[in-house]
Each structure stands twice: as structure tokens, then as C-alpha cells.
Amino acid sequence: MRAVALAAAIAGMLIAASVSAAVPKLDGNELLARSAKLNRWPPTYAVPLHFTVHLHRPLPIRFGASATMYFKAPDQQALVITRLSRSASRLFSRNYAKLDTIPQAWPAKYRVIAVAHVDLDGASAYHLDTTPKYVGDITHVTFDLLEAGLTPVGASWFYRDGSTVRLKVTNQRVGGYVLPLHEELTVAMPKLGLDADCDTGHYDVDAPIDDDVFAEQ
Image (cartoon, rainbow, N blue to C red; front, side, top):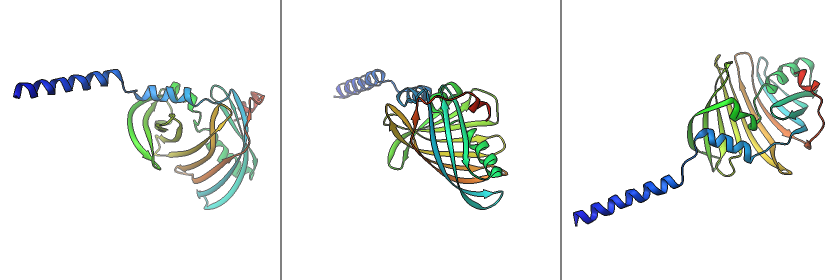
């Protein structure tokens, strides 16, 4: 009987191993690359944005802002403020425009060092911890991808001076593309602290965009 039980156990282990080998798990870098392929962005777009901002530092104030975001593949983006005081415009646009919010560019810029399964508002997701492939002010970045469709729904940037920037995204389909509908932004820096909500307007997909727009950023 013991011999039969042992044989059955060994057979079970072999079956489990063969099933595991037949369905290999994706590593984090493969997840990031597949996410970029499944959730495509258009070659270009222009979209109006409306921000509601709660500034904590340097002054505790609330204000609204309007802007237009321009994107051109593979990774050019520019934020042009259309309604906001000049001083606040420079402060806000400079920090927002520097965020690396283009999922298609992430695989080339970041290396995944750890993957975890997490629950995001009741949805199963992958939490990817990454390090930049370049030397700069950022020490590491985390990305959150929904398990269903690998849609990017969040990112956090961590800087050498202790600053953090967190972004939460609600997406929509525009034609055959997956693009942001609503964003929630939290910035915690030594001289700047804010929370902001951003709502997008109508996407002008494949809009002609002059390169001078990006040169001015």
C-alpha cells in the first residue's frame, strides 16, 4: 500500500510539474511589454483637460485650471495651460508635464525587479516594481496593471530627495485605443505638495501637431 501511495504521489507531482511547464508564468518585463501592445495609443492626439487642484505647499489654496495635452509617438508629450495664473501655470505645468505617463514607453525605460498580485478596488491586478534604465533623479517606479487586459491604472514615482508622485487612472476606449478618462494625482515634494483631479475632453486622434509644441516644454 505504501508503494502504491508513493507512486501516486510521484505521479501527481509529475503531472503538476508538466502542467506548470505547459503554462509558463509571465515575468514582469513581459507583462509590461504585453500591456503596451494590448493597450495602444494613437500616433498623435490633442485633448483638452480640466484640473481641480488642492495645493498644500507652498500655500494652501484651491484652484481650477484648463489645459491641452499634446501627444506624439513614441514618447513626446506637452501640456499647454490655457486657463491659470502665470505663476501657478509655470509651477503646475512644469511638474505635470515631466511625468512619464505614456505606457507604450515604459518597457524601454524601466526594468521590472519584482511582481506582486494585489487587489485594486475589488479587481485583481499586477503591481510591478521597476528601476529606470537611465541615471537620473528617480530611484524606482511602480506600475499597476489590471490582470484583465493588462490595462495600466496606476503609477508611483520615487525620487532621490524623498519626493513621491502618485497617479491613479480611469481609462476609456476611443476607437481602437485605450486612453485616460480621469486621473487623480498626488505630489509630495519638499517645496510642493498637491492633490489634483483631471478630467479629459474630446480626443482629437491623429491630429497634426507641430514639433515646436514639444520644444517649448
